Length: 443
Ligand SMILES: NC(=O)c1ccc[n+]([C@@H]2O[C@H](COP(=O)([O-])OP(=O)(O)OC[C@H]3O[C@@H](n4cnc5c(N)ncnc54)[C@H](O)[C@@H]3O)[C@@H](O)[C@H]2O)c1
Image (tube, rainbow, N blue to C red; front, top):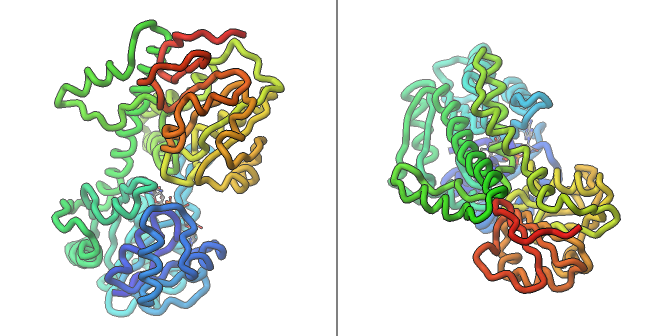
């Protein structure tokens, strides 16, 4: 089949290389740099296993990336995988989706031959696909020749290819049976996990399912963050033991109950605020989700509270990790960003390290004030305090002793609780987020 995929980001590019195993895929992207990289066999994003699939597809002429103005010719399916970030008020910004729709509308005659499936893969509020895609295209083309799908994507960044090939479930919201079976035929044959559970539902239910899943995961994370915040005030409470006790109950799944820095990244923060803002637009206040969001915003305060007797003005502070989690180069809504902002506003000399993130780009795009350091020991050298912010295995493997060895004050605040199970070597003050500070910071 011939498939056009709009948007070559984490979802679009990963989906494209998976579909290119069986189909002929054209990626349409507005970023020229990404187009060049992709056509030269280099992935613009860090995703395990993506580049070999891309190179293989390029060799077989099964994939190419083009700009918006390039003629596409007729297609069997069009997938919309563009970004849907938060607007200033927390609502979902649909500008990129609207722009793709204008592009599809203006070329619908050339795209549509016998039958065209239009599938929305971007996360959008319930009702969006019907109003922005189905109603718009139905005005311009023979509806009998069009099928519409919303398929939510549940991949985890860093494991995108694995998750696309082996999904827990595939949810297909379809306009009709024909669209459903054609889309199933397009996608399921590309999976490694052939016995994947496929659920068919209405387009609106599928749209809501994505928000429901992400909001539920975020709720679990904020729940454990709130309890961890309490545990930080009570001597002898071990939050990991509390979780261990909870998860013996077969009704409580352990996932997303790890105490830490809360949630970040390109999905959970915007999907939580997108859902309660959407709820408000329908006259439904969603106090639970607002609280989830509020709790998550307190992380920086909690980190700084652990060292709040100290003045960091003029002192070197090391940040280990800027990615929002390990195994990705994505810094969107990373907890490191507000911490860096706060520390530099307070006059600290911030130095940051990350093994994968393009720190030059992050610093310039976000206007952050910090020194970029490529070597971990250079980052911590003479630092007054080190904040461990991303759960990279290189930090864990290095160990607390080595991390602290060349610091001026051996004070380590660990947002990821990497070393809670070891005996803290003498001379190091180790403050894991979520624990009562057994060791006191001396101002
Ligand atoms: N990243 C994830 O882990 C993830 C997981 C599940 C769902 N999603 C959802 O998938 C969607 C895409 O997310 P992402 O992380 O891949 O975003 P992304 O920002 O990585 O990629 C989006 C791409 O679309 C391109 N683009 C923007 N406007 C365009 C246009 N008019 N025409 C062509 N290309 C255009 C951008 O340049 C960018 O390369 C979002 O709705 C997101 O919520 C993301």
